[in-house]
Length: 132
Image (cartoon, rainbow, N blue to C red; front, side, top):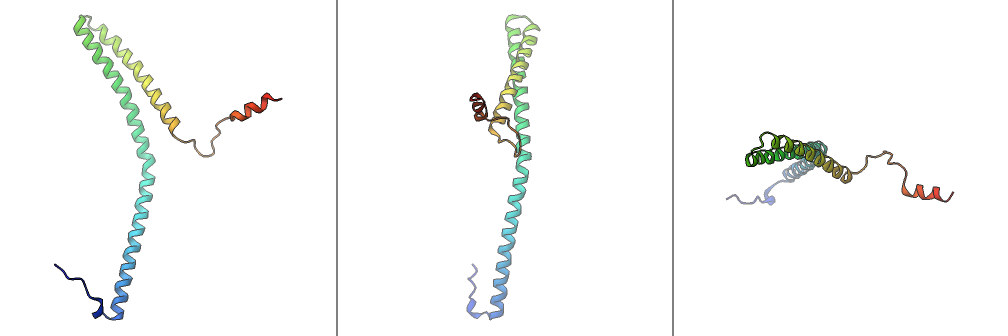
């Protein structure tokens, strides 16, 4: 086990060099932390968009697959092949479209409006016109 260094035996110039080295290391660590934070902040919107796209695609494909499986099971049980599969495949497609529109509406409501965008007249503007 290494013993802690005793600074009493060092000359003033050696202590100055050690202190200078420690300050340069601390400065380099701070600079690297700032760069890492900046890089992660720049990558976040891109990953967020990728995650949103994957969620939308998954919602759509899952609904179609569930419809197809239910249709296949109906065909097996009732012996109506291929009509149950075709009808439930179309129902799954419609459910997928509804899921995608629901998810996109939720994402749009959760995200803030871009800076400088015109969101239309406020409700107070409509109330002011009623007085005239």
